[in-house]
View 1: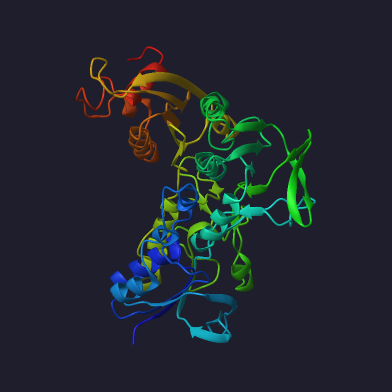
View 2: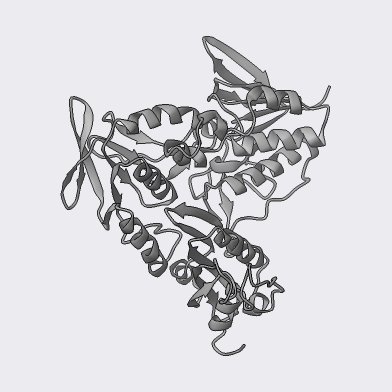
Length: 450
C-alpha cells in the first residue's frame, strides 16, 4: 500500500498537487476534497463569463471531477467541506451532504485558497452586495447583475477592472470606487495608471478615485445606495472587488503557524510548521524574488507551481523548491492590455532601493510595416547596482503579455540593465522594430551608456 495523501481544496494548487503526486508515485492513495462543484477551476475567468465571452460556467474548469479522477486515478470528492483536522490521529473530517466522512492521511496538503474581502461597514450584509470567487457561483452572479441597470464596483484592482469591463459590455452604468488616488494602486505607478484611467473614462465608466466607501443603504433589505466620504450614490447592485484574504480557518484548526502576512507560513518546500502538513496556493504566503521578504500574492501561476512543489514533496520528501515570485500579472481593460512585473518605482523606494525609471513609447512593428501599435513601457532599476527592479507595460495588443514575460524572466534571474540591453531578442518587421521596445527602454534608462 502506498502513502496516503489527502488534499483539501481542488482549485489551482490542489489539483496541481494531486497531479504531481500521482505522476511521481503511481502507488500513492490520493484523495482530493473540495467544498464546491468544480475542481481545477479558474476564478479569474468569472468576469468573462459574466460579460458573455465565456458561455457556460462549467467551461471555467479544466477537468470535470470524473475526468480528473479517471485520468489521474485520484479519489475526487466535491461538495465535501472539510471542517476539522485531528493531527494526533492524522484524520480530516468532511461534511458530504448529510454524512460526516473521515479520511486518514500520512501527508496532508492544505490548498483552501482565499476568500473575498468584504468591508466591515454599515449595510455590508444587504442583499445585492455581491462577491466573485468560485465558478459554481457565477450563474447566480450573472443572473443578479442582469437585473440591474446601475452597478457599483468597489475596488480598482484586477478584479474590479475586469468586472467593470464585463458589465459595461452588458450595457450597465458603472460607478467604480477606489479609495486610493489611482486604479491598480498596489501594482502600478500613478503615471502609468493614468493611461488606464483614461481608458476607463473613454468607455463610459464613472470613476470615483480617492473616495472611500463607508457604508451602504438599502430598501426592504436590498442595497440601494453606496455611501462614501463624499456623498451617496443610487445603485441597483454592488460588486465587491477589494481583493481576497487567505482562507486559513482550517489551517488554524490544524495548529499550523501563520506568517506575518496572515497567510500560512511555509518554507521553500511548501512545508508548514507541522510535520507532514503542506500548504500551497492562495492560502499560503510566499516571498519576493527581489527583496526576499515575505509577501502574500493570490495569482494562479504561482498557485499552480506551489501545488507542484507540495505534491512532489508530499511523496518524495524534499524533492522540489519553490523560489518565490515577482507578482507578474497581465489583464485587459477594454482595448488595453495592462501588464507588470517586479516592483513599482514607489515600492522600490519604500524597500530602500535608489530607484530611477525611464518611460518610453514604442511601436510593436517596424515603422513602415502596417498593423503595428504603440505601447508604453516604464522600466525601473536600482541606481546603485544597475539591477532592474520592475517593468510596467500598457498597450492595445496582446504582445504586451509577451513583453512582460521577457522582462519577468530576466528580472527573476537578477538581470542588470546591461542584460536587458544585450538580450538577444528577435527582429522581423512584422513582429518588432529593429530596436525591441524593451531594449529601447533599457537604452534610455542607461542615460547615454548605450
